[in-house]
Image (tube, rainbow, N blue to C red; front, side, top):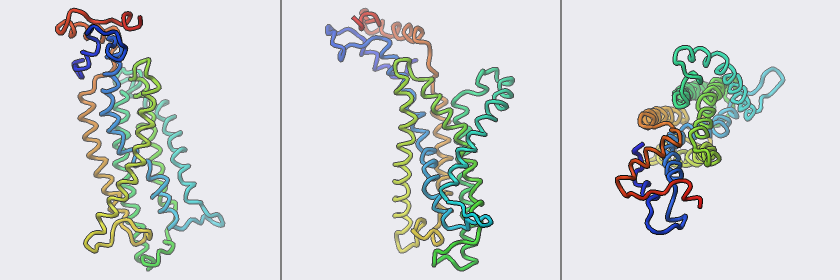
Length: 297
């Protein structure tokens, strides 16, 4: 309730009734609520970066593997369909079983809070990148054994070895992405629901930009001093296993950051309660405080 108290001055009468100079108590409280969600928004940037790997490096890995199943060749990009399928199945299982079980323990209609659901999704992202790193290490080992490192030829390993990381990504989305959309919409003030929804889209957009930035930066740094580099056009000569391990560490650090910011997050209070608290604070500044009705006239 005491966060961003400097904004309280926006609803103190100074003689001007210009809407740019004077706000209602409700407007101030709504602005505070949107600002409170920004640390949570920042904590979603890293997992959004992981989502960007689905259509980039994950698919690129698939192009180096044996895509044949009998007489049928699996298009590498089609593996992304398993993310959607896994997410759909996970959401159904979550609603039908997980919520039912946890509701009995927590007495929460949702089973667990939205932030707890997001936290589980973040933990999934740590394990996803660990699995991806181990799978890539296996792929590089087979490539070395069959002498296709320098040539960049096809690795005699089934493309289905990539399925775990795609399926786990869908499961993570059932927790993180669904909870993220619901959280920003639920916690946004009534007059700013569309802005709350845009927080989710902002997270995905920044995640894509951050993915490109990290790829370029890591590639540049690892090529310094004559080193081979982690990310090359020839994936058989690259070290994506190191890159994915780096992502696992980054996700872990982001999870710690998420725990810290959620510890201090205050869920949205009723507007009437917020107005009463704010009006009490403003009495110490000035005896004249605008209310919602005054600002609308």
